[in-house]
Length: 160
Image 1 (cartoon, rainbow, N blue to C red):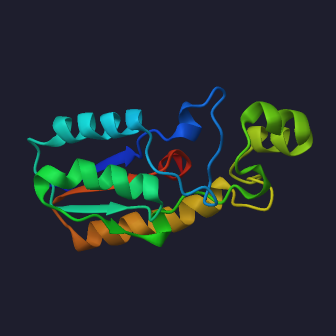
Image 2 (image 1 turned 90 degrees about the vertical axis):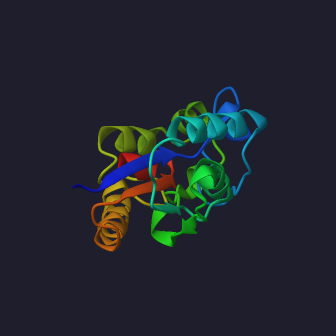
Image 3 (image 1 turned 45 degrees about the horizontal axis):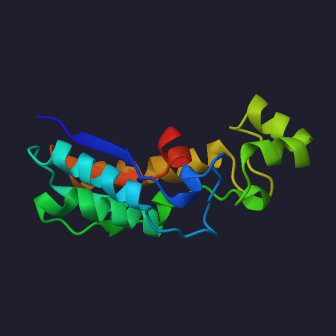
């Protein structure tokens, strides 16, 4: 038998649905948008016939709400973990990529060139995110050998 990880990004917030979408980071603890609730419900329905033994999530409201909806048929209460929290986006939080490229072109190009080393100004880089997330996922795997686990986090966190 093996351990199965269902790694899910939280559903949509108003900032993600904006045109252009805005980076939320940690300062913007937004709830799900109505459309995001529908996305989470669709994910819940897709995973409803699968066995899930445990559910972990970022402590951000958007991730907790998504995890709560998705884990409902399994009668699991999501366990928020700080190590699954959104990336610290520093001075770019609340901005969209067009604004960032215009207002902070040098750091934008550094980030695009190598986000593992050149992260968000006054925030984290992808190497830092990967270190904290890898440790968390390894600990989850140790706690749940040969089980199925649901983890709800964020785009940057899941990518790292």
